[in-house]
Image 1 (cartoon, rainbow, N blue to C red):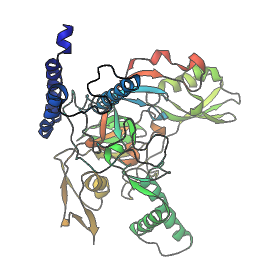
Image 2 (cartoon, rainbow, N blue to C red):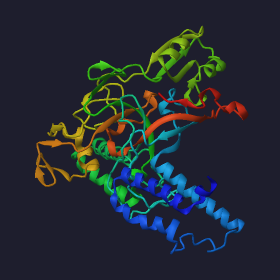
Image 3 (cartoon, rainbow, N blue to C red):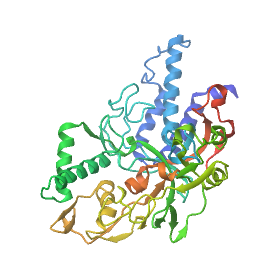
Image 4 (cartoon, rainbow, N blue to C red):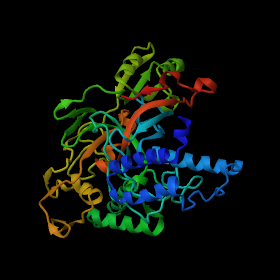
Length: 462
């Protein structure tokens, strides 16, 4: 048996089978031209591919053996990370309490099928910047492949916890990425308009103020762009699928006219008032309410709570009142689709139909804000409005048929989540994978072994 495993033809056969299966999975048959290299590596050995080794020497030095092991580990880990599974950390409270800050996850890429990287020339294990730097790109755009997703085990399902590339991350203000470029641009546009109103000047159209803001950004800030696969990774719950109609009334989601089923541990901000005494911190800790989530002044507390936790807090002897901090109907807020035609906010919005591949929508000046970014930025069309007429790729357009599926993603911590309410749909080509299970969880409020949340280790994500 040992002799068979060392046989060069056996090794070549195994490598060939693996290579052929990968080529079939990837679907790029130009890669077949690389098989002669595989044959030379194992059989003919005409080219000295392992140039760091001395040819013909059976016993290599320790340094060479280490180089050999490192190269193998990097190549193997890169392939696994690219096509199968990747580690991810929960950095913010947007999914609390379904997922906790300090949870370390494995994200399955084969669940929905891995994406072929748009920028294959990149530094191993780095996302968009080189380790130890804040600006140096970790990738080269000499090769830029179009979107292609390999076959996966499943399709995205409603209420899956999904990792995806940030849809508003295509353009960034270098060194000042948060909030995103478009939020900063809208803020600057609003400020310019308010200045004219305050000083009694003639009010210009919003697009005119936006052009001024864009020009200022371009001249005074470092603006850059990122390909899809190098945008920040976000994690949210997919609450609405392509073709679904979503709406929200006082924070209650409705999907296709029905209240969203209970899933995860949805939280909202509450104002809690006591009789003048403080709430016992131990009781809050026992309910897994982190210190960073709580703000209070005297007897007034503000904290995110699920309905179950709110009921428990309300039963404390020194709590006199509790109010769920909901933005009422008609309250204006800077949320998608960022148009005066839609007076929506984080708790009251819709109805909104999620775009689906092959779905055709009517385009008017009123409906355009709902679909503008999908048509222009995500599906690569030249979109313009001239004299109240909509043009797509230079032709007047009264309708549009979508080329991709889109999803509506939201955090379970509803009032502390930057999600689709603030930047719109997530296109299918931005989906990275499915959050599968937690392999480690650390509580930053604790120390020593108490930091480890033992009850969350190897916990499957639902």
